Amino acid sequence: MNDIKSIITDASSNLAGVGFDELVVGIEKERVFGVRVANNVICRENILTNKTIAYLSAALDGKRAQRAIAARKSQDLVEAGEELLNELKHRTPDAEFVPAKLLEGQLSWRVKSKGFDQSYGPEILYPILEKHLKRVRSQGLRATGYFEVKQSDRFESHLNGFELESFDHGMTMTVTIDDRNGATGVAQGSIVELNDGELPDRIGSLFDDAIGIATQNSNSEPLEPGDYEVILSPHAVYQMLAASLWYGMYDCRKVDENRTWLSKCWRELNFPEGLVLSQEVERVLAGSRIGGLNLNSRRFPCGNLKLIENGNIAGFHTDAFWSAKHDKVETFGPTDAPITVLESKGDSIPHYKDLTELIKQSKRAIFVNDFWYLRMVAEMEGVITGMTRDGVFEVRDGKIIRSLKNMRWHENPIKVMERINGITEKLCLFGRSQLTNGSFPAAMPALRLSKFHFSSVTRF
Image (cartoon, rainbow, N blue to C red):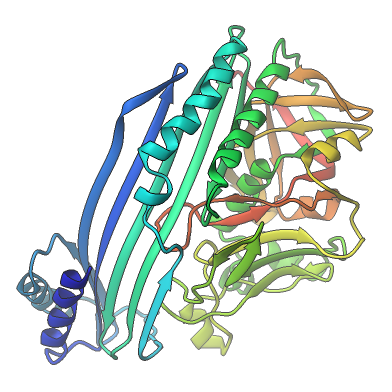
């Protein structure tokens, strides 16, 4: 990385006096290692990519532009910067341009001390996967899956002298188990930081969850559309919450301009008193430190943001333009916080150790393992639609009694949190670390909702 850093610092120094108002010169080395499992066999033709990309982001007289190139030497970046300056001179000013307010000095941020060669390489992953695939075969089941590690080394230099060096790391895992009758079970999870020796247990737990769902998910029966008490797995909660964030349902500007559902009702919502939805700089989960970089995607320093607290909406996402125009505090964006956490503090909601206990303590409910194809259908009503996936079950007196066909649903993902009557203390981690360009990291519980609307049976 030292050679790369010298290329960046030389280019940044040479471009400092050419006339930019703002300039970022950076470079990123990205390594991706993926292991596929198909039909109970580890595919040895693994995905292994190494990519190095340099980038420039600049501003001049209220105009912005950026460029990415495969630079091999400092002069390549200098020439790209001069072309970018000429391009900016002929652009139309951005009416919502806000000058950057950057830190000064240097910041070094490391998620791990080791690269994935030492943490999750083939010689480490293969024996662990083979152990659990042997178990799957012995039960007459079939496994497919994908295990991907993404590592990012990044260095960037800003015109004001601020430098950011980061070593980021993340792993995502998906296991699908199916039987001869077509019943399937899926389990998903992520690792941002992992203590030595924990990987076998984490992967084993993933296989256990997928096998458990698949063995129960056969001979499914239709469910009559309507409102039901529902138990959502942590991943289903993650999918629903992610949809509300991606569609900007907590966006301060949209709320102020009456362009979203929260505009007309955010003061009247009444969540369980202890429910907290927060976006945090850092959180310790199961002994691992998650996050730690307090910068949003604009490299502006941000603090923790509470979206729900004390029974009410507590905050909104505020971008640089809306912050400057209305003297508000700029925040993380919907998906660029180090970690997003949904949890319950206090005893206003019944707490359960984990999903297994939540199901055992439920009298009658529909358990949903996963969602997919989530789409906004009515912005001013806050209604999102989606479908269930890989396991829907009827729970009665704490036991799963039958498998159900997949359902389409229509719900408001913020409104449903008023109906939480059960939550797990265990939080499951999803997404990757902040700078690995993956889906945003979040820690989610399983939930029980007193009412959830299924609109129809799906065809698949």
